[in-house]
Amino acid sequence: MDMIVTLLMIFLLVTAFFMVFTKQTANAVIAFPIFGSILVVLFVIFQAPSVAMAEAVITAGLATGFFVITFNKTKDSRKE
Image (cartoon, rainbow, N blue to C red):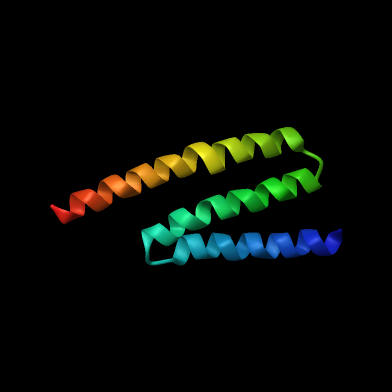
């Protein structure tokens, strides 16, 4: 179990650094729900299912949806 948690933590850090240091906004928007999904798995492993559900709904659903909508609207305004 410790090995799985360690691997998930390393992947979480890699995903976070990728989101921060990527040059393309689309890549950061795509990496954000992956980051949230890793957090959900970690919360379930740490036996916090209510926090995992809240994280899944907020990160994967609402925040990612808002980012995608905003990204599409700013992409359209650059073409004009």
